Length: 230
Image (cartoon, rainbow, N blue to C red; front, side, top):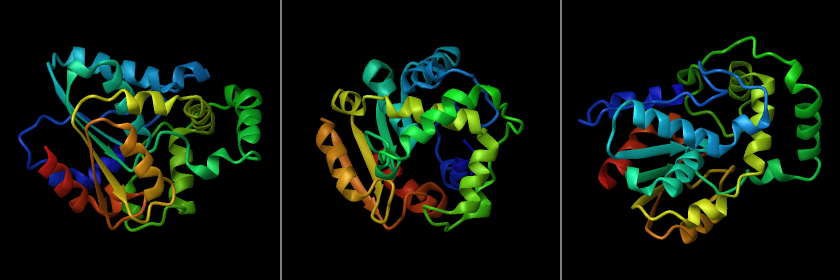
């Protein structure tokens, strides 16, 4: 959630009520100990409960990276509750380097034999204002993410993410959708974005001059594209 704080000076100019969410296992939310608690469907279920609690009829759903995939999952399940959808730096599967054959077994091993024994000692949010204009692979920012989220939560989230059927959810979207993509995104490069857009029935794509960390590095440009669509 805290990555969005960099965009708040632009977002606060809107008349919409803004609701920012700490996913389970992230930020100040609880840290479940089971992989099944980190499925993107579970995250989508949490979004549904928030919408019900706030008594909202229809929402504009905006998601970045993992959040965009949760948003797509939610909209596919509950299209009647969403007016428009904005997906930022998104893909329908794990980034290419996380799917390498030598990486997944390591994540599985650590998650299955270590994760449940490791408590997230620091349940916190990252101050992303410290990492303005950082590269996609920035050791300081990645370590800050890991420390704030916790090793166990991070590993379990990756495993749940790997099993997510993104193609099914993206191809099931029926609401007007804007995809904002970074021309220099090394996690989800333009070739991956084009595959995403082809899956979505009512998708429009805007490319901006940014890497994967667009809501931190290019907040004004992200907001300008989003505001025009909304």
